[in-house]
Structure formats: C-alpha cells, structure tokens
Amino acid sequence: MLTKNWQQLAAAFLMLAAVLVVAPPEAGAAAPLRILLAGDSITEGSGGDTAYRCDLWDALGGAVDLVGTRTDVEDCGTAGFDADHAAQGGITTADWVDTMGPAAFALDYDAALVHIGTNDVNGVNFDWTQAYVDGLEIEYRQLIAGLRQNNPDVTIYLAQIIPCSFGPDGSGFLGCDVTHEGGQDNNGQPVEGINDVWARIAGDSSTAASPIVLVDQTAGFNLSDLKADGVHPNTSGKAKIAAKWAAALDPQLDDEVVLVEPGGRWHIRRPGQADYTFFYGNPGDVPLFGDWDGDGLDTPGMYRPSNGFAYLTNTLPSNGGVGAGEIEFFFGIPGDQVFVGDWDGINGDSLGISRNGQIFLRNTNSTGFADLEFWFGLPTDIAFGADTDGDGKDSVIVYRQSNSFAYYTDDTSQGVAPTDGQLFFGIPGDQFVMGDWDGDGIDTPGIFRGSTSTIYLRNSNDTGNADESYSWGGSTWRPVAGRSTR
Image (cartoon, rainbow, N blue to C red; front, side, top):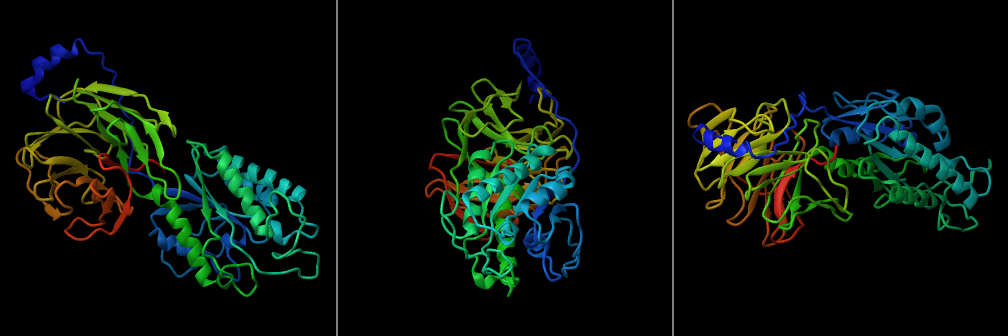
C-alpha cells in the first residue's frame, strides 16, 4: 500500500516491477456449513426419537444447515431443530446406495456424516465370510464415490459403527456375537470386520480436496448405551455419538491456529493424526493466512520485507507439498507491519498496514492507495484484523507486548480512532492471534506461548482465563489463524 507521500517514488519503482493482480470475486456473508447425515436407524431414530440428531444440533449451536432427502421424526424439543437427513431404518448399505443415494448425492453439502453398516450385520442370514465382506467393501466404496459425485470437495466423516449386543434370533440372522471363519476382516465380531473395511477405505481414499476423517464411535461406547433391543442408542448413547461427531466437525466450523516454522514449513493441526504440512515462502517472509477469493476458506500468503511484495495463493498446498503464489503485488514500504482482514465485508480478505501507529487498509489485493486510513495504537503495537462485534466486517485490534493488553476499535473513519474495548491476555513474549474459535461469528483472542509450545484460546473479548488450551508446535514457530477446511 502507498500513501500520497510515497506516490512518485513508488510509481517509478512499479514501472520496473512485474505485478500480477487478480481481483477476488464479490461474495456475500459466508453460508453455514451444510452437512448431509447419511445412514440407517442409528441416524434416523427408532421408537419415535431422532437418534443423535437433536443432540448434535444442540452441540453445534444450530450454526449449521443439515441437509437430506427426509424430514420425518421432526420434534425433538429444541426450537429451530433442522430435521433434514438421509437415513432410513432397516436399510443395508447396498439398498441405501441404490434407492436413497441418487437423490442424496445430488444435494449440495460441504460435509457428510456416515454411520451405516449395522444392517449389513443384522440382515445376514447365511455364513459371515470374507467373500461377503469383500462384497460389502464394493458397496462402501460406491457410497464414497457417490458422495463426491456432485460435491468433489466434500469432507467425509466415516464412523466406526457402534457395537450391538443381540444374538441369533432363530430366523436365520446371525446377530452380533456370531463366530465365523476368520480372515482379513474377521478378527472379531462382524461389527469389527465392518469397521476394518471403513478404516481401510478412509486410509486409501482420502484426498487433499476431499478428506475422509475416520470417527471412532466405538471407543467409549458401552453396551449399556444401547436400548433394550441391543441395537439402537439410548439417551446416553445418543449423546456420545453426537459428541464424537461434533468434535470431529470442529475444525470445519471454527477458526484454528496454524503454525509456521521460520523456514517456511506450515503446520495445520489434525487432532489424533499427523499434522497437515506444506512449504510456502522463504526464510524471513512474514506468513499471512486469509480468504483471498471470498470462498469462506483461508489459504496461505506471505509478505517479503526484502522486496516489499505480497504473495498470495487461493489453493491450499497438498499435504507434504510446496505451494506456489497465484497473486503478487507491491505493498508498503520498509518497516511496515502487514496484516490481514475483511475490511468491507464483501470481497473476502485483503491486507492492511500498521506504520508507526497509522493504519492503512485496502479492500483489494493489489497495489494502490488506502481505502481507509486512520490512527490507532502505538508505533510498537502489533496490529490484526478482527470482527469483534459480529457484523461481518473486520476492524483493527492492536496487541501491546510490553503489557499483554490488546486494544480494539470498531471505528475505521478518518482521524484518530477511539478505543472501543480492551482486554488482558497472556504474558510478555506470547504471540497474539485473533480468530472465531467457537463459531459464533465473533473473533476473540488466542496466544501461542513458544516457551511451553502451548496454544491458549478465549471465547470472549474480555480479560480472563483461556477457555481452551493444548500443547503443540515448536518454540520458534509463528502463529496465524483462520479456517482451512469447510
């Protein structure tokens, strides 16, 4: 960004600089996460209940759009409950793919929660053999392919299905505790064999564009969490299933802290799995993370102080890969601190500058004059973009490392901006970030404490203890924040 005092110098410089500018498309407010619920009665419900769906709706705070082809069993006692789902009691996976799949696959969804396979056990009236399991695997893989048919970037959450406790009922059904011939997927009860298949599919079919997350619904689920029929979850069981789904969905719903090594290696945390890592930038670059194209997802950027250029990409590099810049432009002067925010609530994120207490904000990712210019904070403060009031636009918050106070303003008009609020969070030496950690639309503080490699997050803009903390990262790593999956 340029101020008028630097116009002539910058214009001469830019005559020699090759600058690629890609203007992002306009976008409205981000839509809620659209989730397809696919399965059998473990998802639809039994005996007039809603299975885990009402508990999940409560756990997610209603901040999602549940989608499906059915809306039966609508009343769960929670106002505004979204009853849409794509599940049917008694259905096998093969029947689901053939009869429910075509309509469900055509829906628009960002994520799919899949708990299916119970009736592949319940409906078996012949020997449980490896050949039978091999046939199931074909159906399971067809289901995964179908989920991606209309939504190639869908995130698929595959359940390790819950246990059951019924035995042979005398009509030929084998039940859950049948003995069998042994084999690759017959290392225990049939449910375990089915879960082996799902685990294998998650392991070999997950992609960077459409990740498959294996959700272990069996761990911690006891037979006492089943109804008397030995198949369907009771009150405690439904709550456990919902909690597992909600925890798995968390990275798609909330902002996350992303850590960057000094050498340009980025780390995205995947709880229970190895970090998602890639290289973007050179040593000495300042990492940036923003929604440059307004699609609701944050991708890497960097500012190179050595030449004054910003390099942004709209593509999340592949796991283990190396990213390449798609947008580059000259921005600022030596000594500027560059930061990220959505200043107008329209075009996605763009860059801002803090220069000795003067703030310059530009609404497009290109070289040019500031669209907003005002004074806020001290020359040594570190500036961030943050939506502190939930209005869909970012304003500016500055962090003063000398006293661990943050000061924010919602006024971006010309002149000296007033301080609309302040908070105390962290200790000297902590690295500050802002993000929407709980999905309520309001950005709140977080810190990375390199001395202990610990992240601390708070869900309100006031002084107080962290609402969440976890150990992660290296002492010299640098935090940024945003949402990399949806």
